[in-house]
Image 1 (tube, rainbow, N blue to C red):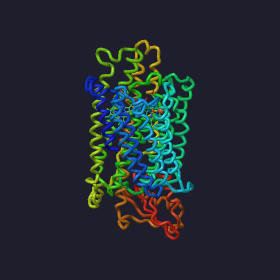
Image 2: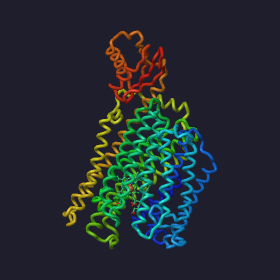
Image 3: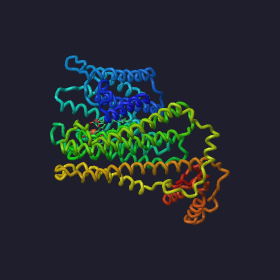
Image 4: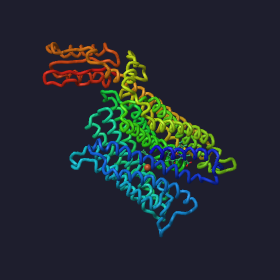
Length: 623
Ligand code: HEM
Ligand code: HEM
Ligand SMILES: [Fe+2]
């Protein structure tokens, strides 16, 4: 996966450089061939990541090992064959060699994202079928024992293969051909992959934070259902201006506008479940990437997707860099970051690393985060100019001063591409040498001792309330609507007469605000997460003999209010990152509820003994 990622990103970098100076490599590598490599390898590394992730979590979910192992090896070899095949045949396609046998292009079929010809098409179908078989083979035989996560993965892996069948149809009628192509591309990213995404995130949250299985299952069920309900007809947002019937404009706009709902739902669950953990997480780096994935899925796919999905907005942006800005944040942000997060956990488990020093991992995360945001911003900036100058005024794309309207954006693109490249190099180095950063018990305890007891926690590290979380989401969506309005404004008469001020201002506020809010929100969320984890680490470290004990056994004749006050006063007297033991000869449920009502997620409750004669809980103070 990492090799494919490196290759894919290198082609991205190359594209950015060719954009700066189109004469570079002009006789060696055609721009469109490089672009096709970039797209094909994007699909390949992400699918490889999905396969790896599912083969990692499948045995835990199914309680059976992956069998037979030779099929897994075969799958890996098949992926390499396909990759090498692309390397050889894509340049051939550029020379007009598609390998026609009758009506069927065997080597290359020239469909964006699905370039591989019929031979790789069949190989992939076999590969996906093997993968579906391997996954289902790990699950319990009786369907009754399946929970929502089994079902989510099952629908996902079977869907991966089923949808691919449409890649094998070709038609000389270009519109019909596009229907088939979108059946694959759209139903993959906006149905099957999202289903896998939701299920994998649900599973990881459940494993990492011990979130309630029923609640996660419920979220997975609704997430998957909403994806299917909105995404199936939502496909028609690709049929707007390509010669297909006009009724799609209404249905495509309506249903695809609903597609962001499950994505909002997903990040909401990340927020809720992150607060479930009682023990410190062993792999914070993986959580960084998983959070990034849910955030970018909502911002990149949900919000930036929404900005282009209404037919009368799409008419302006279709085929410009605005699409590329959405494509990068959605594809890399949502799926790329997820499989990288899963890779961190896979390597930790395979190498038997309890905990590792995650400074480098976090650095890689922030570099990739800023890199992709910068790339997306450059595309958005270039795309806005592109719509106006090239599309509305109809000025020459390839004029004497080569494509001047977008030249600044191209420079920004190249700069952020370098940042992204460095982030990728650090990431790959970090993943491959993770074992060197394994922490020994002594280092872990030294790290714990270094943590101070934060008496007061800064605003950015304090726990995030639901209200605050909601405000961030609203701010993000407000920016998204501003961008939509900006794109819509290209239809104004004044703009067509030569005055782009209104769409430009709206784009500036919308995109600027969106990228700023996304960054600030990520910093805020992850600071609160880190500080909560620090506190859990401290609480975990305290031996039971060192902490205060409150016994309610002799006080049970007192009124409830008095007991509540005692518990709350004790809670208030301890510092963040400390805990006390509460015990009683009666059930402590009512105290637990009272604390929850008063403090929300600002405390942890770890049951030590649960009756029938003695009840005991460790209560810790967290942000
Ligand atoms: C994580 C999920 C998603 C991914 C990975 C993704 C990725 C992409 C990519 C790569 C393209 C460019 C295709 C091309 O080359 O023509 C695209 C186009 C598009 N996406 Fe998404 N997308 C996702 C979700 C969404 C959602 C949820 C919406 C709507 C709310 C949406 C709306 C659109 C629209 C309208 C286009 C067509 C733009 C045009 O050609 O004019 N996408 N998407
Ligand atoms: C160094 C990082 C990267 C750079 C500089 C880069 C640059 C580019 C460029 C210049 C294009 C062509 C735009 C055009 O047609 O003019 C492109 C297309 C595309 N790239 Fe990247 N890319 C990078 C990383 C990635 C990653 C990591 C992914 C996904 C995993 C990705 C997915 C795509 C997709 C889906 C398209 C097609 C977009 C569309 O059809 O609108 N790129 N990229
Ligand atoms: Fe789509």
